[in-house]
Length: 205
Image (cartoon, rainbow, N blue to C red; front, side, top):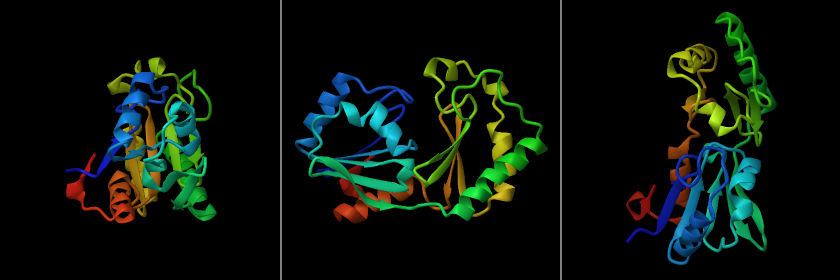
């Protein structure tokens, strides 16, 4: 008797930053005929478009929440329409970027010799993401990262001291996501609950 079915994007509907399969798009189309479907992910709206939305032809009952729920979209009149967006101020964005610079100096952090695209990205003005191998790193390369070489926990410890009013979390094997405190997938679920006027018992994530 569930009314809303929620999915994570990376690692659930698709491999991390990888295009959705035709089998999965067909299954989602069938599911939308009987349930509301919501997809939550840390990616930007642009990344949602690239790996997911451009393959979706049936979206009568589909809603998306990029940047860990900091934004919420519905499909209406042939386009994706914004329901809300929690934008970081210019001062907040600057504070986060400066905290990364200071942290890298403090721990003498050096990026890998080969990176793909920028290592730090401001996503939809809502989230700042640091990726060890860069924002465009292929999954095959990200999977080669060794746990013992992962310095993200150390980076996070330093960032938390500098950014006490922000949510800082590990994402996947490669990334650190920073949003306003309280903005995460739990927040996204609460917004879905309010928007559709359903209880958590009527949802599956």
